[in-house]
Figure (cartoon, rainbow, N blue to C red):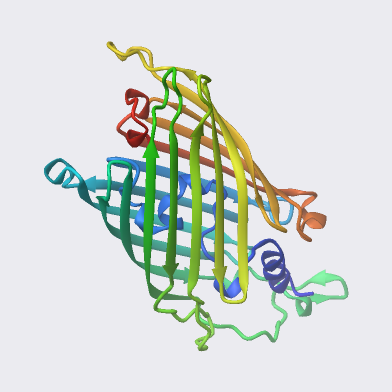
Length: 346
């Protein structure tokens, strides 16, 4: 089998979407809010910056699959409008895949609006507009025809068709988000109940997606998600169950899971010298693909998250169960440990 084709075959095994429709793919989805739903811009923090890095499938090809993303989102006009606000965000994404250095660079701008429909509920919507550029280096690919009598001959003709080295396209999507909050957190009561649920539809313009100038297009992608924070009364423990569904053309992805959060210490109420801190650990399952154990540590405005994809799909034969290492860093204001109301904890 040709090496070029093998790379893409491996991708099709591990990824729930076809190679033609592969999207940004992180495992710590609670730390990639704008990838999941543009309506999450400005939904949880006044200002938020997140950096994500993922390395995958090193046992197949060392350093060949790397993904990085930088995200900012925030609220505007909330001080003036009180119960409603505007939101905006931007995220820059860079992905490298395979021996052919197939690269994807994407810049998105997100705009949103949120309004409190009651003392405990908020409804919001978001629009995402972006531009994507993809490129490939055919000179780094090797083929069966270039192996003569068991020896690799770079000058040998592969007789394979070569397409464009790069192309770009615009991308558009929409999303809605509902939030419900009640109770107190980080207190003796610890009786908060918070949940978020939303729906997003991306690739609405169905852009062309081919290095060969064909009419292949990205399918419209639909994402539904739900997550919650449920405090266990009179303890330092909270449960964070979640569920996400993504459907794109004939393929789909399902991720159920749950985290446990344990508050290590409360923020000092008057001086602020002692910073609030908590640890969160748990696992998600990307159905028919991978288990995703994860741990996240929070202190004041900062969060560090680490996860590892453990393959359970057909690719585990090649990877020995090794999938992808992922690390995320988040700074978010305001500091959630300063607030007792669950409505302030997002």
